[in-house]
Length: 188
Image 1 (cartoon, one colour):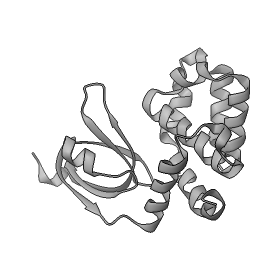
Image 2 (cartoon, rainbow, N blue to C red; image 1 turned 45 degrees about the horizontal axis):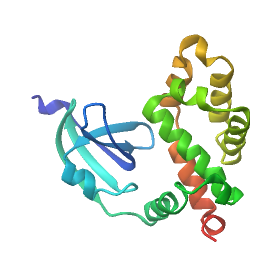
Image 3 (cartoon, rainbow, N blue to C red; image 1 turned 90 degrees about the horizontal axis):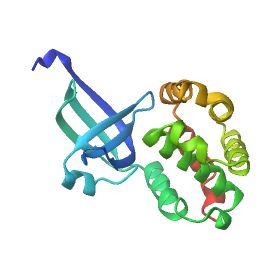
């Protein structure tokens, strides 16, 4: 192990999931990229979405991981996820819906890609998501999504997935900014 290759990433946990092999994964948004970190079950269970972590690694070998204090912004984001993201769409206000629909889109695309998501969308849900993406300031994500709906199957959605995965700022960052900006109206 060459210590000259030691790197650190600091980012916010935006998603917790198990991978194909059942390993506990935390997805960190560093602001410029998403980093997947494989951790033990105890750390996985004790880490909240929105927590900020500093991760040290050499290649894929995790060397150390440290939690930093949960910021006020992270607490608002966690509250949003806890209170609204599992509610039926019909129960949400327009401000809440504007963030919830992109939240689930972001989760699905990060997990399975457009190939699994797009075929399940009918015209109404497609239009509603595109409208919400535009409303939160993610017009380019809306254009990518609509392009995937129109012609993504031709290349098995690889262009749409590649664009989505490499876009900066990330959709998660845009959604978090929207939720923080509109917290008063969202939580009323």
